[in-house]
Length: 208
Length: 208
Image 1 (cartoon, chains in turn red, orange):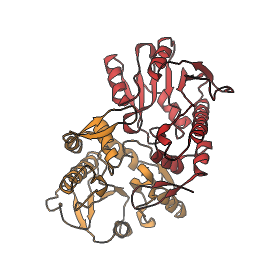
Image 2 (tube, rainbow over the protein chains, first blue to last red):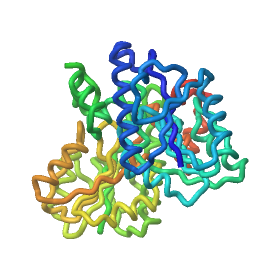
Image 3 (spheres, rainbow over the protein chains, first blue to last red):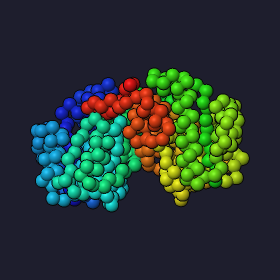
């Protein structure tokens, strides 16, 4: 089994721009990436590839192999899957609440495919036992798309139901979940800049 | 074991008012309540209480016992817990993605307390094996509060990690999760009024 993490540091996470400037967003995505790599390693996954359109921010990467592909995310991933000769775990880089235990459970699915849905219809983690017979289509309602791609390919699907693994960090409100449920460098980075603002409804983010 | 569902129909779910008018919100919360009751029943829970400040909308309730308490949610629930002589499962009424299987897993925890965190720091489900030694404090960051109340009472906690049980329906974006992951009458109600709007980021809600 191999894991692959699509990653782009330059101008990352534009939807966090209401609360973090570009430099901060780039620092933050790098911390999240390193946390995801650590979780994969702790789960016992030895072969980890980072798929990136640029070497920016990856010049000193030692814990994973860097693969450059300037194509669009889907094209790059599908090219990667085509050549795969073993099961592939596709993990997004913005999952600081994903734990080694989640990864162990996801990769020990009995089905051909295990999908971890993200907020708003996304796909946070996708485990493909037979990657060469599968093509991904991220963006939009990719969770539903990935379920139907599996069905069309005759592959059985497990849906992995996790609040923590399901929390991708894309929008300011997601940082609230990181502050409440997280730990490690990504959480520390955010907790130096923001506090939780308690009201009668959901907890919101407030700057210090 | 008994389950208790706090419920108020009148002017419910004000944070959904950008997309549903008052009559629609009241119809919708009733559908969600009935779905939660069904899930509890299917999970084998026979004693179900609805705790409400008013009989409004509960005049014909046959599947659960209705307890009137005009006090604030926390006061009413704590009074209920004080008198409890068996384990209590507190379930919010706005959880149409909560399944019988979730309920079985939550109530078979080995710990004294099992907490299902909701979005933005909330508590969606709270199972209390020793309810008379526990006091709830909903609103604000109640997930963290409920963890620390348990710690102070010397009660062990399991955190139940579920995207589906963790999705409480409070804000328009939550309806997206209902459309993607839901089924039953509450989903049908929303899917007659809204469709998913696919873009590059998260899926959003759009009216028909």
